[in-house]
Image: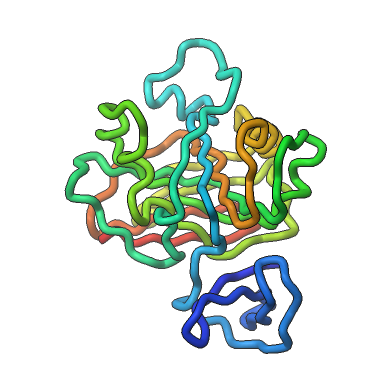
Length: 250
């Protein structure tokens, strides 16, 4: 089932997508209200209302190597960083290339949204707390990432996390294709089975330290092929079994 968040009647509302019809619900995981509206792609919002966006860095070995960070040993723990809710951007919404970065990069990823409060999870219990999966774009000011002590400026700026187009609730994240295209040209093409830390391992690790609340977003890492963006580019992140997230760069 696909869960969407849309702008309708002057406010953000949740619904279940059935073909081209949105059946409105009382919340992300709520019951249907009995009201239905036609799907308007322009009305789609990021399918999450997070208190935080948790991101995993360097979770594919080929990406570690392309950044020159390969020490010969696989990471023993996931590398975690955060974005704030302000970083969310809606599917199809433009993101302006920041004037304060000279090396603005795309990173396509599988993302997930938490459905129920999660703390001290185990690999066996982790997936039960996921409301659904979607496509994520981790936009990065690579030049600032290399110079700053923390990745706050490089990763957490406004609209640096496009998300969507919807949540796929019946989904197995273990081995799906993740593809990123820029202006129609394939730049990243990998599978989630190549992750160093899979989704249960990520959630188990994160919730040892931080409670995940309903609506929180987790980005699971990006594969090899990241690269720079220019104004006028269009980025498409496609996750097999979910759909395509499109982001024009202004």
